[in-house]
Amino acid sequence: MRDQYYVYILTNKYNKVLYIGITSDLLKRVFEHKQKYVEGFTKKYNVDKLVYYEIFEDVELAIAREKYLKSKRRQIKIELIKKSNPQWNDLYVSL
Image: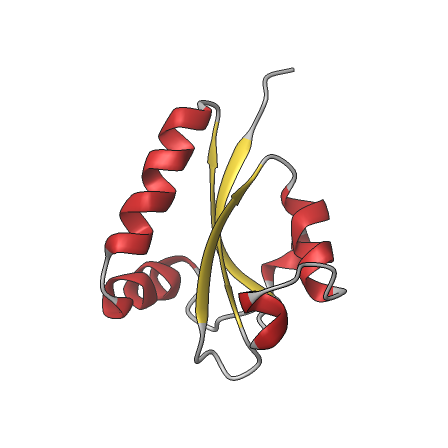
């Protein structure tokens, strides 16, 4: 089995705060955010709802995508989420 890497976007209950991250274990990482195990930004702002993710087989491509998305304006990120998840549902429940 090939390794997989995920670039993901989390938000808070009110869809006001966006956080972009990268991981090799999306289920575990989002669980950690939900349990507030992760110190820092996501814990401080209660960011634990998975609203978007992409899958990569190449870690370098995943890192490049994460950096690219982080560099974009908020509106670009919102449009990306709305295209695949218009209701802003928590995708964690379907993983």
